[in-house]
Image (cartoon, rainbow, N blue to C red; front, side, top):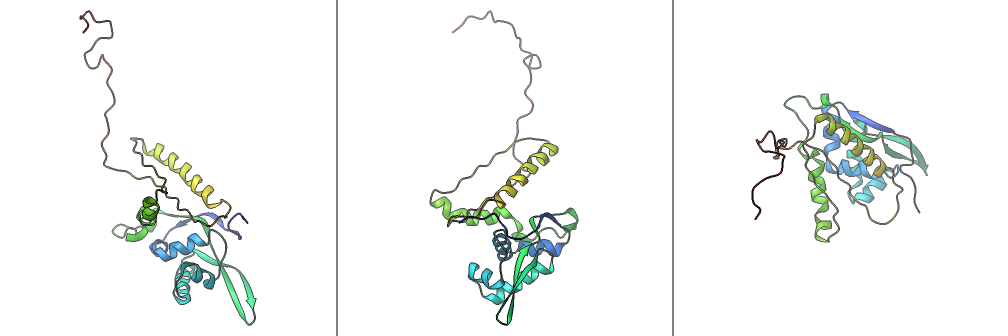
Length: 204
């Protein structure tokens, strides 16, 4: 059985404008909770069962996410005398706005998605099931920005894929400046003092 995720309405993108929001999304367990909510809305009990953690622990982290505007109650259901709350994300994609990282504060240490991907992918690498590429190119900032927008669209496509099967796949994508080497622009033969005509030198 497949379905298009999630089963509730949410915004496409949401800017994180405060350091508390950035810290909230940076915690590994909270990141996992947000990933699960890409599939469908869930109760604290369902989330606790999925991640194998105590309900009280998960409830605390859901409360942090909700307080910072990253999750919200999307519907309720009364079971006997108890009202169950189903939580959902407030947006498909969160991104950090410039004002969220004041000078000297920066992002939390565990916010690096590549660090998470490296840990998660270790077993797949050992099993020969890791697909990955890394490329380096000397481009302008505008070119990098336009290319990244295409990656954002690809991530959104991945998030919207129908849920099916019994395996959860990780998809990591990133774009970052490096101090890697590059070749200077090639010079023409004239610039190098060479000639473009045929040579009279004997062949070898």
